[in-house]
Image (cartoon, rainbow, N blue to C red; front, side):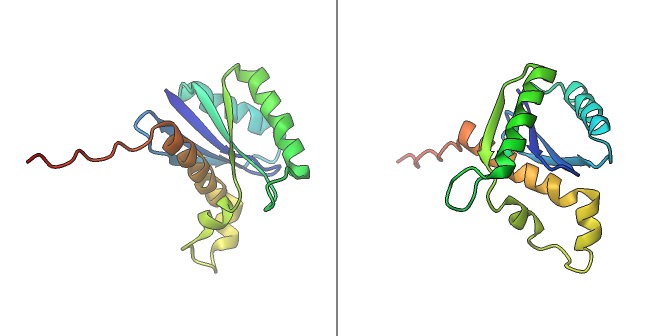
Length: 145
């Protein structure tokens, strides 16, 4: 199994990769100015990485309701299904960008954000949440007596 994590945005799309080892790794974000170019670049990643499932962050409000951005993500999910015919799973993405920014140099944050580093770190957090649910850690065996 090969998973692609996505943090969707209208200007940047953060990406992460994971497999059945259960570890999510950020990939370079899609930062092309044109949505069609981002779509072609995404198709290249799916093909090159031989992705079998897609996991995308779903934007919920803090009260758990779906906001206006959720409609954009819903449309993007439908496009993903049409383009790739792969299963698409959603994960609550509340606070992932905040977590992704944690520990970053605040002076360089603007440049880092423009390069999509935060978006891809957020995608890795989203994907890791999914992988942790899908492949729960095996508890250690009790010591033998």
